[in-house]
Amino acid sequence: MRQELTLRGNHAVLTRANPLAKFAAVMLVTMVLALSIDWVSASVALTFELALLPLAGLTVGLLWQRGWPLILAAALGGWSTTILAPDSGSILLDARIWSISEGSLELGLGFMLRGLAIALPAVLLMSCTDPTDLADALAQKAKLPHRFVLGTLAAMRLVGLMAEEWQTIGMARRARGVGSHGNPLQRLRATLGQSFGLLVQAVRRASRLAVTMEARGFGDAPRTWARKSAFSGLDAWVFLGGLLIAGAAVASALAAGTWNMVFLARQ
Image 1 (tube, rainbow, N blue to C red):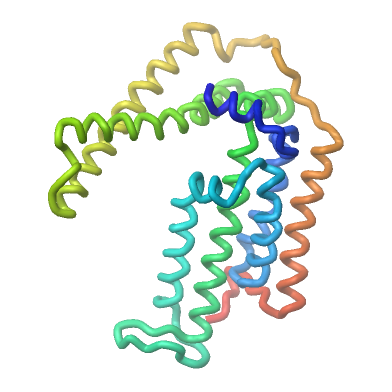
Image 2 (image 1 turned 90 degrees about the vertical axis):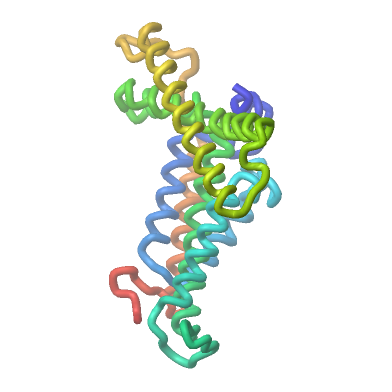
């Protein structure tokens, strides 16, 4: 409910677009970035995506707050690719157990930028899309089964609750003196215990939600809709924007001569 109220009060342009149009634009960019591991196409796409932050009502601070796990994962993936990829070209750094060459650095940089460019649209989509609007669009426009739509809606609703539940469990454990002290191994064991507690709570909450939805007749046909899902001119611009970003990324990489297909990647 808190997420829905936040989105309702957000007057950013992308919040008014149909969720299916935003999803189609994201898929266009993602498919192009998944084809190549060069750094030019990823850099171009990432530049466009960062420029779209105000249209989604996001700032750099909010982006980091909501997407820092993905950002760190992309950075770690780029670093591991750099030091593990076969050497090619001049050796830039030799640390005996691992080395960095021009080719491995370019490959690692491309991997990191591509990870960021793929993750950022997902963060934008989740930040400017109301779960109820997405469910309406999936059911009315995509004609997906009601059970799948309701499951998707329930999952999106529970994501925010899971974050709050993690904080609640953490505070309860710290009040009992668990996880607030000890060596790194003890802290790791405490974190794993907290994760297990969150898993148990998630299963219980999902079970109660499923029983409640079944008891109230969700999924039975025919259905009526409180809000109609419709496409508008803005949705066409959103789709064209995704097409423009994907096309600009490919054209820039081809012009720079760095386009490197994943299944034909240069060693």
